[in-house]
Image 1: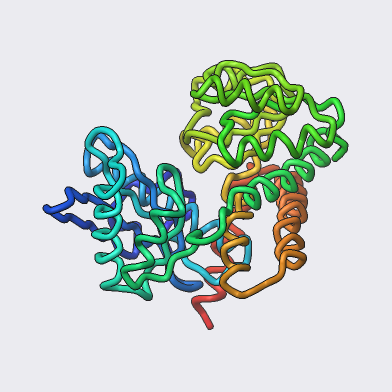
Image 2: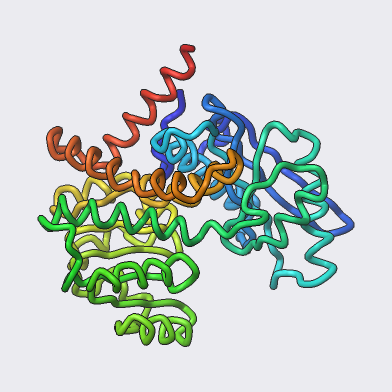
Length: 349
């Protein structure tokens, strides 16, 4: 079995399958990474963005797909790990050109409809998913926005992490730095503010950060300062790999937990943070609410059952941190082992 710590996935042979898609008429250049289908078809979002090289796009897709394998295994969902990226050359297309681009991508996916279930990710929208679905592809996130449920799951994880690390799940007065004021970050800010937390919020769109800060009686700060702000909890909810090995000694938080994929630059950073006494809840554990939401919609669950399953993320975080404390290991090491055990058991059936 491949090494399922996603930050280490840089080998093209570590994934079950890599699919490249190119359409001359629309300019489509895309990569689909299928990491592991032991538990079911690959499920993961479609990311739209600029990449310096095709290799960079492939590595990104692989890293994210590996994280989805972990997410689904630990959340006990019947899906494998997958992710896709569509490479941009300049600004994103709009209108009819965008629709043609996603229609072309959907036509590629329709060739193997049982292999990959796409969904919304950074740079893509519900409308994009509808266009893909119109090509005969099963799509999640085509009708319902998953962000509120992602935020709810992170909130549950954050409360559990605070209880373990800070000694209380009462967030009143707890200082939380949230990097990213998009749909998930803003929703999380509102949830923790309702608990009485003191919110620091940042975003590359300063106006958006200001609006969220005003709505939660918080403070808008520079996004580059967010990881290093004086706080109890740092919640990355935007870009990946914001905590690097050479930045660990600048951190002033005690707990890192958020929605952003791949918040740590490498597995070595998790080890350094562990030595520094900073607890990190892996993103693929904390941000599983969106995936649970999509599965719930596909299964026809009502909102009460959905809410119960998303809130159960907090229970998983508690067990994970207790186990990591007992074994004196970084939580990511324990999470990887638990996921590997589930995959191995499923593969033996």
